[in-house]
Structures are given as C-alpha cells and as structure tokens.
Length: 171
Image (tube, rainbow, N blue to C red; front, side, top):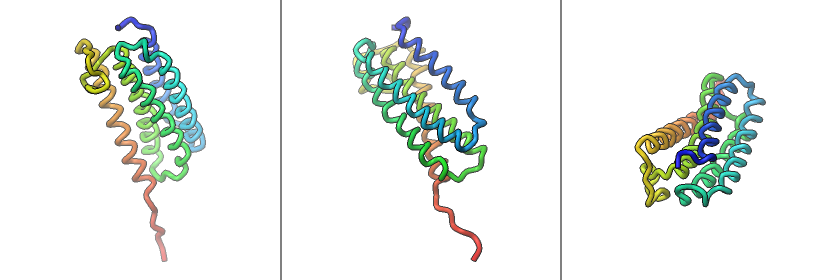
C-alpha cells in the first residue's frame, strides 16, 4: 500500500541518510571511527524499530527480513569502526569506502523495508512469495538492492586490500 506512513518515513530517511553520508566524507580518522560506531548503532535501532511494524506490512515475511538485514548491517558498521585505524588506503579511497559501507548498509535495510511495504517479490522471491507490486515499485526496490549489494561488495574488497599485511621495506 503506497500511502502507508512507515513507508513514507523510510523513503525520507533513506534520502536524508544518503545526504548525511555525502556530507561526512571530509571527516578525520578518529571522527570516521566514531561515526561508523554511531551509524552502526543508529541502523541497529532503526531495525529494532521497524520490527514493531512487521504485521502491518503488505508482506509480513519480507517485513521480518528488514529488521534482520539491519541487525546484521548495524554491527558490521560498528565492527568496521573498530578496525578502521588498521585500514591502510589512500585518504580518497578511505572516503569512498566509508561512503560505500554506510550508504550500502542503510540502502540494503531500506530496500528490504520498502519491499515489505510495497509487497515486492521480484528480487526476493522467497521472502516476497505470494505478493506482487506495480512495476515501478519492483524497479525501485530492485535498484536499491542491487546498488547496495554492489556497493557493499566493493567496500569489502577495498577493505580487504587495506587490511592486507604490509611487508616492511629495507633490510
């Protein structure tokens, strides 16, 4: 149902968080660690809060998947904050990794949340079984899910590169 209020809040939150992520790209290393912890906890909180509305969703099974997604992504961001000082990448690449990780974590949760509200099943045939949504809603959810998955995969690859063991040069 398109006019259901939590769906509208989720879309607004997604847009605001995307803008917030872009604004934070100029932070120092210590601030980055702190903001990763903060975003991890905020996403965890949003996920717990969205769990309250599971039975009101168009697709309750998908509604259960949204909090699960966020409860996994929130601690990932907090864990990333814990190891951030060990990441060895160029400052510009660190900014990209930060933005990819934070925006993809929120995006993945928001996409599943929207899928539950809209009742989509195109990208999530098991969780969305028995539900169909208009093509534009399927397209929105599919785009956000694919973009978030690609962003998180790229962030993980870059993090693995930045966390590799460095060989000492010299003697």
